Length: 325
Image (cartoon, rainbow, N blue to C red):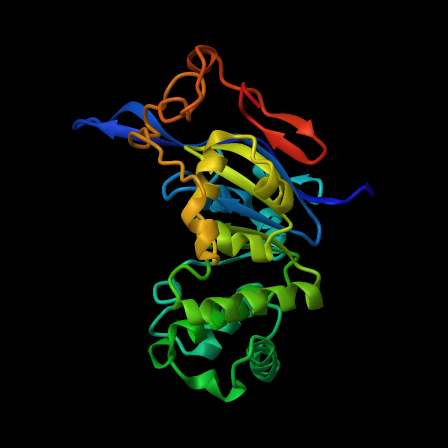
């Protein structure tokens, strides 16, 4: 396999939020939202990040962009450690990475026009002003499939799909290399979701973008992702290409997720085995010892309770954290 260039590298990244109580706000524990994550994102690819709500997907994306400063670990972007940067140096690096948010209704300022929203990054980084900025904004609106004459309208005048296109235009304003797509279609109608996915794929081809695509729907991820990382309770449990994940899932949690993806053929759907996980997802403030998934795993062994399974490559481009893999 040809050597690919790593754009983003996460090394043992942890994001713990303090839990405080009492009048003196004493520290009584931590919410371990992300707890020892390791993976790479290659230049020009789309890495899908999937898992249940609350497992730490969005926190991982925000930690890469340093919107949440990691408690421990390193985030390398093009070989440079973002966790060691502060001030103007980090600000310059942030021009190279952007984010598309989940809710197109909440992520746009209702008091600002479309022109002001899309042009704000250009203004903040002093890259364009006056007529030049207006022309850049109009060009960005055209790129994402919106009429440039919408520049003086407000967000409430647009549909959900159009608002998300405005969010995409804002993310492209600084010509980034890397974009975190934080469930960018989950708040949209099904009929609009395919349009946004096609737009993101076209932009990636035309502009050479690299994506981290966060979602909880595997059927969406398989259409856009080159590789897929599966996350459970703050840890990555499996990472490989979609084809390998679908044909040979090695982690029992991945098997359960795949069994929930609907199949269009009614005969196949009727005869296949569904894996129903018992119990509740443990609290990230008090995760189980050993393997995080053991309390719900149908195939656990005694070793699972005592030893945290190592993150290892069991096949080419196929990583997993499971004692039985």
